[in-house]
Length: 133
Image (cartoon, rainbow, N blue to C red; front, side, top):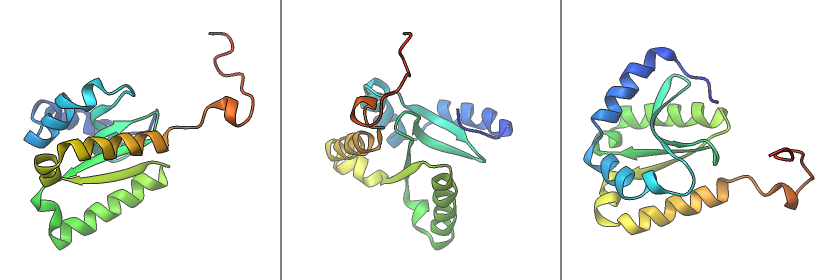
């Protein structure tokens, strides 16, 4: 489990209850029933990420118009670097893409998950994981 700041938990819960239209669409129409588990508004480190898939070590951030101002872009870049230092892959998706190309966004996420998932233990080295399951 990823380390997180406990002070972010109340805010994460509030954000889950008050998702943006784009977060709702992506969650209810794709991620909620995706075969690999995603969490929404997940506290990781000092941040709350929009969506997180622990198995694929993948963070999805949805960016509205406010993310395209210089100051916010710099903050987003710092945030991405910090999350990548935790060995996470961060993908950013513009809200406009959710509106205009939802199917393409879903395919992009599916590819990112597939590429980020660890390879099967049988393809690399033998592992005792799951031997007693």
